[in-house]
Length: 266
Ligand code: NDP
Image (cartoon, rainbow, N blue to C red; front, side, top):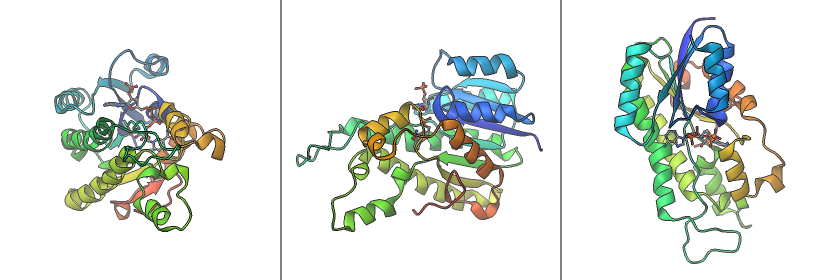
């Protein structure tokens, strides 16, 4: 197996932490785990003890250009090149924007929550990709993975909007999250088109519903526990994601894939 180096944002817990754990279990990988702020989670601390030679932890606040650029400078100095950037850090909004006609299954989402979703979920990956691009260009795989969500699939909401029956509850909430992830799909496609001459590959990844802080929050907002039971573990999803990512080719540039490698509609 060829040696590869991965940057994972939002690596202190949830899906990001699952990536770090699974990647370090492969003997040939080096991982840069970007965390928003100390303290490090127990999981990351124990990986640092076990794999300190192949794990670098760096501070990165995805909404701050200054923080992202400082992290890139530090990684450039200490690691030099990256093969993969996984823009995983993300947040979910608080509910639904209140248009004054909310039904009882719709909670109000303040505009600030929607702005925050765009700031972390859409602009964050852009800042990270821009700052770390020089390191990616020095690597072999030259791949950016933007972790998105099925919530960001426009087609499914269009179908719900056009259907004669009421929309499923899952489509009645989290407009800020959904819009921020749909815009992320465009970012993936746009950068994929703009930068492919440099050998870069960009994809969006739908990890599916996962048992994480965000997954449980989303499950509560959208009543998913009643519909689907408990979510699968983040490790199951991350395992699939890593396999899909490891097999990407230039023909995948710009795509939106799920963690089984199947294409999602836009
Ligand atoms: P978690 O809430 O478990 O973890 C999110 C991570 O992102 C945390 O480590 C958090 O840092 C970090 N983060 C949040 N805001 C920032 C910021 N401003 N700057 C830097 N890091 C930040 O979420 P998941 O692991 O579930 O989510 C990972 C990705 O998967 C997200 O992009 C999410 O949208 C996506 N996703 C998740 C689904 C699910 O069911 N869980 C479903 C579909 C998509 P800190 O620990 O400091 O708070």
